[in-house]
Amino acid sequence: MLDCPLCHHDDIQFYWEDKRRQYLQCQRCELVFVDPNQRLDASQEKAHYDLHENDPSDAGYRRFLSRVQQPLVERIGPHKQGLDFGCGPGPTLSLMMEEAGHQVDLYDLYYYPDMSVLNKQYDFVTATEVIEHLYKPDEVWAQWITMLKPGAWLGLMTKMVRGVEAFATWHYKNDHTHVVFFSRSTFEFLAVRDKLELEFIENDVILLRKSSNESTKEIEKARFSR
Image (tube, rainbow, N blue to C red; front, side, top):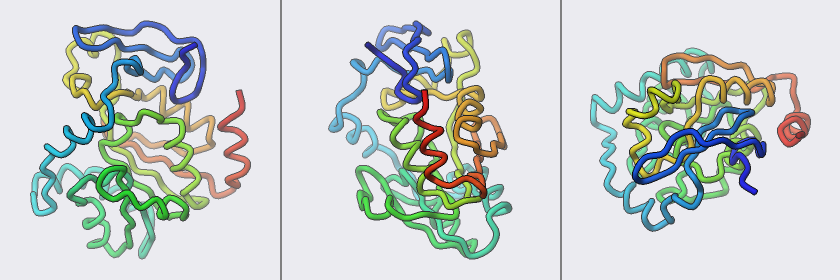
């Protein structure tokens, strides 16, 4: 039986279909996701990522990333340790955070696959244009929350679902490596479940803060309760 790849609820309904893929929606967390049988394999996925040309010296790309970097810097305080998760072949946000006085580790499944950094805890974790690519968003989300120190911040960038009519003409779904699509309701569900403070900075910039009073053990228990 197919269940939600994020919250594992089993009430899954048809959402949309085009010539290439079928999209389903969880009726609890409202995640929209591609039928798992229609996802790319690892070699096809990496071949697509190899086409990306993210240049750390590109002023336009830096402006794009500054929309999450600036509000995050305003909230975390000076001299913090962070992780840029899914940094890609040309890490840029990490450089921008280092220029602001912070230290940043890198992780990327294909380009910086040092899994030792996933065993640390951080003052902030960033994932820009990453969450929509995740085949196992439940596992990665749990990793992120576990890696956050009490009171630490998670900074995300992803475009969000705005309803079926908008979805029908939405360019974001046309990228074959985009397989899960969050909405505001999805993030609100996660924030309540995992006791996170939630801020929507822009239409595609989301900040979440781990409670300074919650232990990792308590959050893990809440996350996996049905």
